[in-house]
Amino acid sequence: MPKHFRMIDAARRNLTAIENSAVDELLAGRMGRRDFLRHGSVLGLSLPFLGSLVTAAGLGTQQARAEGKPGGTVRAGVATPGGAIDPVTYYDSGSYQLVFQTAEFLCVTQPDLTLKPVLAESWAPNEDGSVWTFKLRKGVKFHNGEDFKADDVVATFDRLADPSGASNALSVFKGLLSKGGTQKVDDHTVAFHLDAPNGSFPYSVSIDNYNAVILPASYEGDYEKTFEGTGPFRLETYTPKVGATFVRNPDYWGEKALPDRLEFKFYGDVQPRILALQAGEVDILDAVPLDVSQVVLNSPDITVLRVASTAHRQLHMRCDTGPFTDKRVRQALALCIDRSKLVDGLCRGMAATGNDSPFAPAFPATDKTVPQRVQDLAKARQLLEAAGVAGGFDITLTTLRYSDIPGYAQLFQNFAKKIGARVALNIEDQDKYYGKAVFGQSDWLDSPLGITDYAHRSVPNVFLKSPLVSDGPWNAAHFKSPAFDGMVTSYLKALDVGAQRRTASDIQRLLLDETPVIFSYFPDLLVPVRKNVSGLPPIAAGLLLDRVSLS
Image 1 (cartoon, helix red, strand yellow):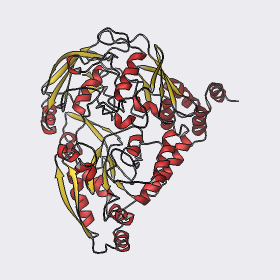
Image 2 (cartoon, one colour):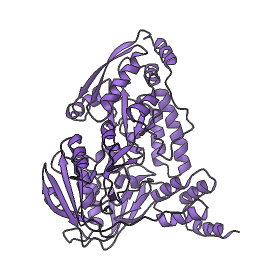
Image 3 (cartoon, helix red, strand yellow):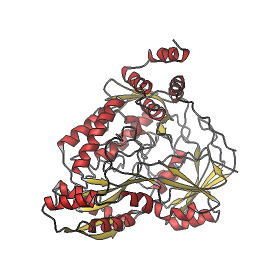
Image 4 (spheres, one colour):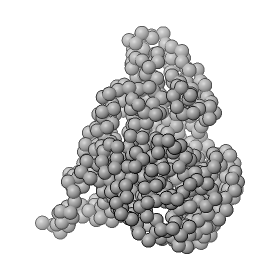
């Protein structure tokens, strides 16, 4: 037996049945290197161990990271935080970009969607994925000198999962993790007892869930005074509506940050941010919208990091409101869209084509053999005729003034006109569109036809549950399908990658048939930096600046 196969066999003796099923997928060629590393990391296997298996299987080696030069001040331009910064309740990029520098997660996603341990050293599920046990890192201290322990993790997730509170993370934890479900095993071990089995739970306590930074058990609010955390930077100054500065944490448990200092400047709009970058007033911006990207793409002093993202725009049609009660009308509108014009024109080629389900091409479980829906005006007209609306219909599309969405709305209006659908546009400010984000008090959730932006996630769980299951809190399409609900339950609880892939295929085909929501494209995330900046990890979740250096 060749030496590398002996190494694989020896390693497999210590793996569980679920872990060995992933190795089977790798060796059979049904799973590539990237997907194997990602799935193995979700199950809690270390990246070095997974890398050794990949190497032994003859599928390449891990690339070493070039280390940057220490010192200096890195300046970032970000959106002005929407209000008082509180990790429990915040939802805006301007707030969480700051908190990511000072507070940490149990784990973080990497560019290839693998999970890297941070405050957790390892984790593992029980046999059905209903309990996940996390081993916590020892020797970690908060900036105030307190030891990081299991009590802090329990308090953090009880806070986030409390239905009587205002936690923004309830969109993730509803039906997944209840208050009291996070239990201390010992000072450095916690067990998450879930409301239902879940095969990718670690993403829910990672940077993917930007509210899930670990705070001290004693946290009572007023975060802006301290920016308390365990992270590589500590607060120096914070001035609301103006900016913030942070300095390297000399007592950090891990590799010390490269920059001596971070300086954040707040901007009320994207245009002043871009001007500041062009003028050399800042070194890095948070992500910029597609509609202004050309300005920075053409600048000789600026590099734009393109990150493949699962962010998207959902075009919902209310399935309980005419004419969308008939799925043939919904299918007709999906067929009138020229997706190539959206990707190549609206997005300037910096997007992936959508196929009317949240399974983006970037997700490993996505079944790429499902036929891609393309523009077919003749079939669309036939469907409208069969549905009894051969003469077309009048409808208002309500959406928000954000990034490329108004442009998408106008293009959709033109596409729909070709099959006789007369679409009037109602483009609102974000506050008016979202309202109170509950049914009956939200143009987003109540409009018969609308377009809504959804931010990147490393797994499709939230995209499947919140806007599409029958009782989902973001179900703007008012879509109710027991068959779909059952498929989602099966997908979410699957620990085996083969089972995930099979169920994902069923979901994709069902949504193509029902078409409650149109997923036309998944735009790339665009992060502009000046040419002298290196070391920024290209992840879609946000800015992590501790390994950034300036030349």
